[in-house]
Amino acid sequence: MKGEEGDACRAWQLLMRFFFTQRGELPSWGAELGLSPVQCHVLHLIEPGRPLAMSRLAATLSCDASNVTGLVDRLEARGLLVRRPSPADRRVKVIDLTPTGSRLRAQLLRRMSGEPLPLSRLSVREQRALVRMLERLVDDESD
Amino acid sequence: MKGEEGDACRAWQLLMRFFFTQRGELPSWGAELGLSPVQCHVLHLIEPGRPLAMSRLAATLSCDASNVTGLVDRLEARGLLVRRPSPADRRVKVIDLTPTGSRLRAQLLRRMSGEPLPLSRLSVREQRALVRMLERLVDDESD
DNA sequence: TATTGTTATACTCTATAACTATA
DNA sequence: TATAGTTATAGAGTATAACAATA
Image 1: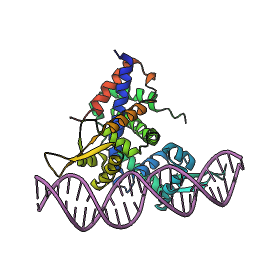
Image 2: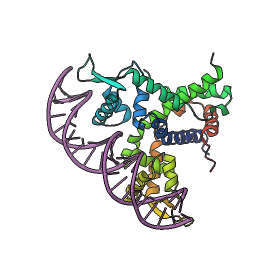
Image 3: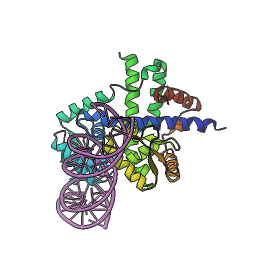
Image 4: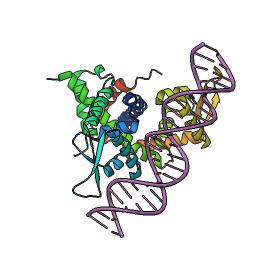
């Protein structure tokens, strides 16, 4: 028998299926806004008014710093964000959304939440239980 | 007040955060196996012994058919899968994992489940409840 | 005629290596 | 010396358009 282990395994398996399903849909979400998957990711990561160091972006995306340069180049060229040196450490450059970028981010978030999972299949009580559990699992960014 | 709507929204928000977090980690998972993110996705999609039409792959990845050609070219060149015409409709080509591909897929899945979310934070009872809810939300592939 | 997959082409995404500026 | 970011280069990922084979 594989009692406790079994449930955790099954939960993880379902979460992975969810992950790959969403991954397949990400291109469609961004397409109408002219955003590639990675651009959606970047926009999701930058909360307006909360500048982000480029090095932190590279770490979060698990990609090389040189890649972030090009990524930010293109987003900046489109007027969605700006980059400026950090006052604290002038080696560091932080990026922040422009008003245009902020609006596009809001549109993206709205679009992503437009046709989500059939959460209505769950009762209110279950939704609350789900939120409590996910918060303990996911909300781990002690920010 | 935003009672029922609020919980569904919050749940979706947390699931999206989970999605983007995993998306950031996908490159690391595949790296040691020499797999790009999209290659991980393809391997995850093809269950061994269950051939998949290339057109179906394009639909699931939300990408153009011409892209799948190159994708499958490279995986086939590495000996991870084979492609052959479907007997039923010779326009269609189906792909299937080789034994090597099947082993690599197993390795990938093991690696992905290696250090998952801290599911142990949930009690057994909660884990079961989570599984039941996720099954209703995610397990929608009437296969 | 419509559909599946391929080819040619171009642009984005990504990593490696060498470099600059700052610490 | 070490770190953050850039540049040059090359290969993978992706879309568009034109095409071949099959239905």
